[in-house]
Image (cartoon, rainbow, N blue to C red; front, side, top):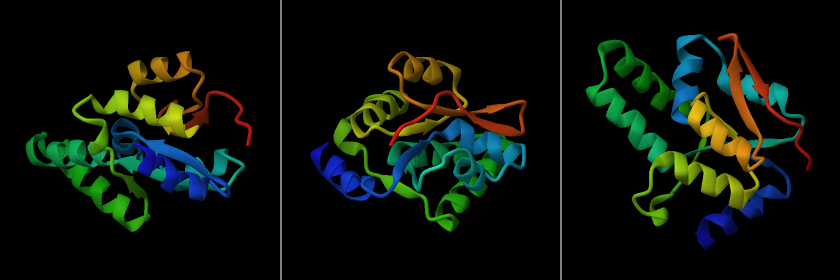
Length: 149
């Protein structure tokens, strides 16, 4: 955990960290939203987008066993993450806890913003007053609260 924190804190002096969840990645592809550009447009600060290694595993699993449509979306999502140079956070040191719990824990520890369309995850994050980016009206991303540098 400290290795993750040290690495992220090096960049935090100049960038705000945004952890992106599986749901919003797939939703943005389905609705033809440029996720990276939309997030950059609603946050006034320089940002670093990242996903957890667990999110990559979720997308790989969906690509293997999902329906034809979701499988295809997951494969496109994996390519997009590489093409857009989205950083991957190695979260294996957190053990076997569910990905959502890892996201909440890391967002809290690293003072990060989370981008997700998962309602349960959003509620958990909002209870802890962690800023959340989510989709509204299928085409627009919004930030649930003001953030301060």
